[in-house]
Image (cartoon, rainbow, N blue to C red; front, top):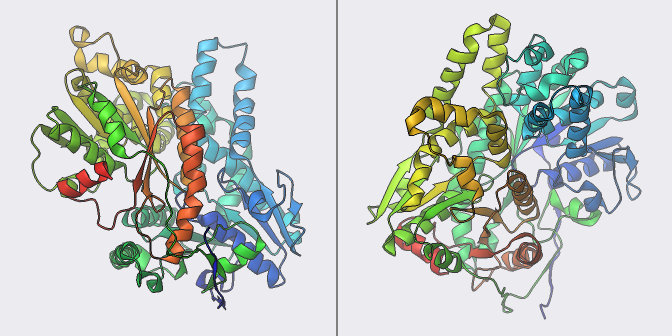
Length: 599
């Protein structure tokens, strides 16, 4: 039995991002960085300071109601345990469905069913969900009666610069789409926005006003996460939203390194990431929050988030934590038994797809199988990860920027040639969509996929199920292959068919043993299944619970918190799975990659 220990000192921090707070505070960042918890804690602190506060969430993984222990829906709900605090949860999926029904309803039964299905697919992606959520945002940003009721409105999850830029565009989106001029990525979701243009303009103006709005960028001290936050900051600044604050969450205290080599390694990595963070972030007002040992659920836990050295229940470090879970070697053994095939690693950024793809590819090559490893890693990190030539292994890199520029130019030269200036501007904006990069990269991948008939092809970073369905529904990819290959070069089996065939393709979903990353991986699995692709396995990466010899009390409690997530994956989400421990050394070089397989 683990015996709890108590750490009793509590010091309330003065947060820079809470100095002279404006009416609107937006918290944005990648999944799993803690933006929901920080937004909740912020709302509580403002309420404690005597302000009337409305907390609004559109993050499907946020579970604000669970955090506060009350049921919250799409109606403003008082948090009974706190004076002056109210909350509202906007379900982005429900909002997106209402939004789709508003657009598709009038043409259902009039247009052919195949056309209706194509329109529905165009409206099924992340862009539609985001725009539908922003549709809900705007009423809150422009409702003067609501502003009279509340001193502050705190938003968990802000719209991206891409969405806001779309809403800034002049012109009639509806007519542009109805006339068949738009490409199939993000213009479809804009079809129902015309009548709200005045309200949207007011909302965008409010977002760009520093006296009214503050964007809080939440990150972890990890290179990939900091790079993404820097891109978000640049994108928002480019459209006039420049009031940014930075919060680095989950920093391991140096005091935890005294009895734990793993903790020492984590601390060193975090400090190195902070030293190397992009210059645009170094210039921002910044707060640091230490890693907490407890789950941030309930008022007491949330009050401790914006503090230092808080009351924590910690297990004895002489009591080991063990989990019964297979390692990566069991999956590699199954893969190797087929002697060839397509292996695709999918998952959100920052979960370790590139490293795991490299580890599996190197292991297959060392077992004597011809293997082609390809990636879209923008930092060309793969060469540094492998450090040297591996027999039987071919390594390539697809440059997303080059491929996307090529695809954009192709569309502009074809579709754009017949458009007027307004239509051309809309098409250019549409081609800035994240979907465009996925389509372009998938076209580049398709040239490599055929090799899987005779060897292993391991792909790092794959398109989402939405993009695959979009390509299949519109026939865009198939037509592109036909054009490039000519009739004599066109194969009967398309790449989409190959991805749907479990005998030819194995999709491995990579995640972390934390609530939000697991939920995001579950959503990805549903997205893939909708495209007719059944994930073959899940990999839980960087697990503290799987790491041996923990000496840090804090890390041991974090390990205990992971157990329920690992159990959910093992018994409810995955057909097969593997757990990879958090390593003391960065998994760089063939020896460390091999160690990932064997642990």
